[in-house]
Image 1 (cartoon, rainbow, N blue to C red):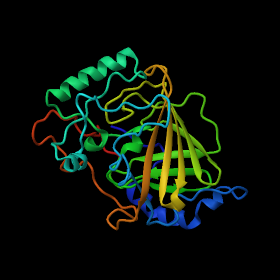
Image 2 (cartoon, rainbow, N blue to C red):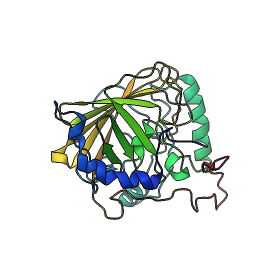
Image 3 (spheres, rainbow, N blue to C red):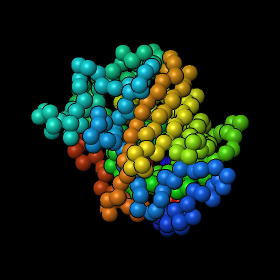
Length: 298
């Protein structure tokens, strides 16, 4: 069982307040400085990926311009998602991680080696979105199906999406707690910069998520800084990510993600969709069970 936040509202209530929040706009958050508006109206969402770039679907991080970067596919087992396979005229493949990436500590390599072997043997690799589990941070950035919706207020920025309403809270212009209780999405504090950027600093994450879809584990020492910048006259977002975890990685590393505006009527305004319904292991593939509560919430 998991709870997204101690003060989280019900999905229907969250959807209901979006319109009011965007009408007030982020200007109320800082009267003395320009504030980027990630939600000009209730019909603005942000979908991961760049149809004309190297990451059309948005399920994996892009490499940074220089320096250590995220795990990608093993060169001997090139990854093709459905769209890439269609373009290349090949059969889609599953993710097998490149374990030669120098960011990985030995215990991480060994755990991922076992995951790789299972996938090569035919097992379907785990992804949080396919099994309705919390994505954590920075894994939240790798959700390609439905758009992220921003709700900006004077003291807080919320990020969510329609399917299963996973919710991130970013508390503005405050310091981290001294000892945050580890949770699925950790403790995020943030501030605005340059009139076009939201900077989010996250600690206090539990160790039950992966940092990517290659099933790269981490520890509770994980520290993530994300910079969401509005570009292309408001048509796109550029996200730069810095990841540190002395328990899992040999060095800090960086990654990039892109988003574009999503106006699809079936996706915005924010509305409720179900992830868990009809999502059982119908073909007996040994899939990770979907989250289940041990007791009713109400």
